[in-house]
Length: 353
Image (cartoon, rainbow, N blue to C red):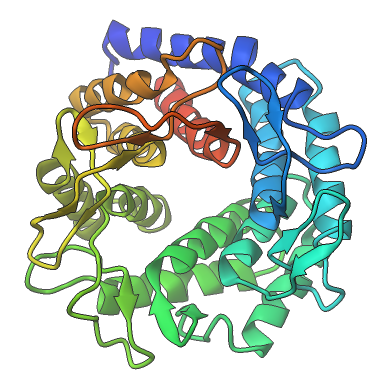
């Protein structure tokens, strides 16, 4: 099928923004050459903001630069990937195959817990370097410790949470594509089955964020439009054509978009709960529509995203749009680059197919 010229133009424009501005800026300013690792934020003045650092950010940055190389960026993507991976596997490694949450700027531990969210991104980061033995050790530690159940559920503070389960799904799919161990595909299958069987509300078809340990959905749990998009494209990539995947994307678009942007959350009846809008939800909207070939949706998603990228220093962004239409004046979080690059990769793939 011939893509509209606007889609190719959008793809070229987004990649140019990444290659010419965002990737060089975050490599030059966002990586700490003195103490290792990555800064969490860059201020809107273009200067790094120092402070405690999370494992998830260095893990995401490792994956970002590995993916940038695959997309064709000719900058020092391998050096950037390895710089971030070095911090992940030294500063944040606990020694048991799992990764601590938080460290100070000097590498001292501030939180030893093995949060499942961090583990999912550690697995994704390792996939960008093909370090399968290390990734298998992490996967098996998660299963042995009951953090990840054998049905694919992810326990966090006594509840089954869709968010870390979703990112684990993403990571094991990445490994199923590049790894040799058959356990990756098997775990991805179990996650997909449990998500469809237990996390989708039969009354609305929406995917719910929280369940108790017996998979009973919590009545006051959120429905996040950004996660409807994200689960949608993840299920589509794993299962192929899926009515569940397309329905989740439809819910995100029809019930979760206001003022041209995907808002943060709905309640179980799909009524708006939090009308603020984060940058990451806009990237997942673009990604999902690119995955299903909805070019009108891609253009609308890109228009919403562009509002966040319109800042004085090219390569930075705003993160939170308030219901009154104003942005919170705050530094750009480095964690968001992962979402932008993921969407850019999906759009580029659609333009190549």
